[in-house]
Length: 131
Image (cartoon, rainbow, N blue to C red; front, side, top):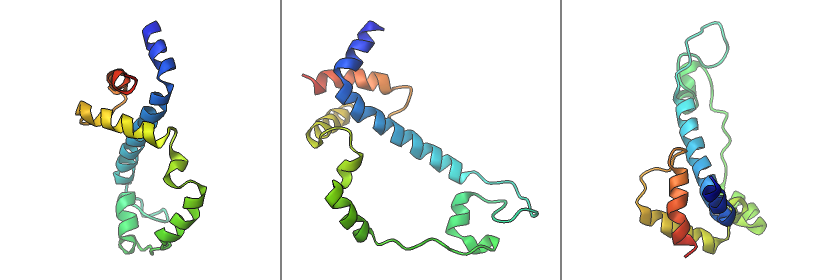
């Protein structure tokens, strides 16, 4: 355990790159699962019933709903976001360090980052990133 704490302490920037990536993967999987689950049919309740959230939002007319989603001009969002830092707003490391970590991560040939393998990935990346 002391070895692990030593790596974590010295590799805090690597942690700041790797763990948010894991969280994004886990959250995306959860949302894909959760929005795909079919809700039980209940004719007594208002709103969607007997279909998943994905179906309800993509075909609202099937359950008597209507499309209330607002169109968004991505260019306007970009104009607002760029002066504040653009995509780096959600980055926890420098662009250079992220590029170095990305290259090292890709060289490992990992098919999927998971909570079960993240510590092993960290241990494999550490020597490459801090060599």
